[in-house]
Image (cartoon, rainbow, N blue to C red; front, side, top):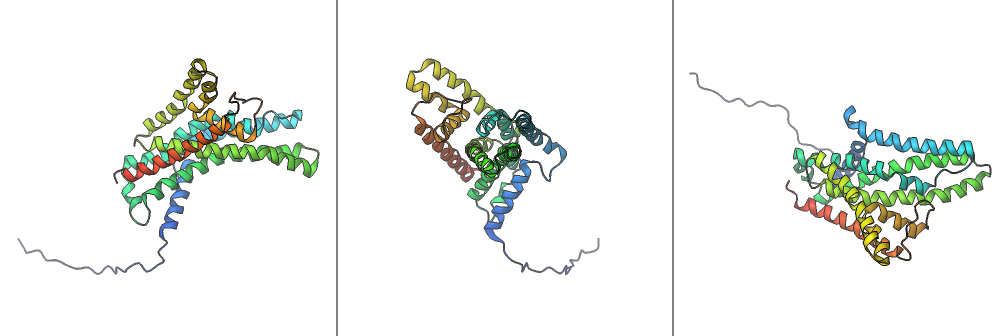
Length: 288
């Protein structure tokens, strides 16, 4: 057998001399990619089916509200009622999107690629959280803006009417932001516990559905004070209590919370801070 010889090939390798974009660019890129992934943009048709089905539902409701007002001249529901009435579609949207954002990376073991410099573990978690907040806010906010535009065109009092309508819109957008922050934190925390998207989706739905009958049980068994506080057992009703304290009661979603509105405010802050804090702790501990 002839002896083997080694050959060195000059492939013209050169060191990278371009700009180092750094940590901020990595965070922004991860955020933008995650927002796109939430709506299936840049993915195959299968990834778009369920998110855009939910988008179609919320837009259809908005179209019905606009059409009813243009025909009858009356308001079918307020902006806050619109947000509150979409609790189940939002829950399904979160069950679809949150596992897509974090569970896939756990399953495919791609976290070491993210956690290599300059992106830190907390950066990853906060970028995903910001992306999901943005997705939910767009889901609930854009249809409200369409309803607002439709309402302005049906009013006959000109600029003053548009300004008055804007005053009605502001609490609706604020309610959308409150829900985006709290629900995104809870959903991402749950989804980050497993790499199986189906399990994560089931757990997210379970958190919202299982806590709902607890409200009824506490109302039935508790005294007057406990009955007023019982709505804090479910994130959805907790947010209704918070919005009722901040903006006043809506006729269709009035909760018997009495003067305990500040307690709902504290509870919502604790839930938000706790879910985000545990999410950050989760990614400090997760194996990479």
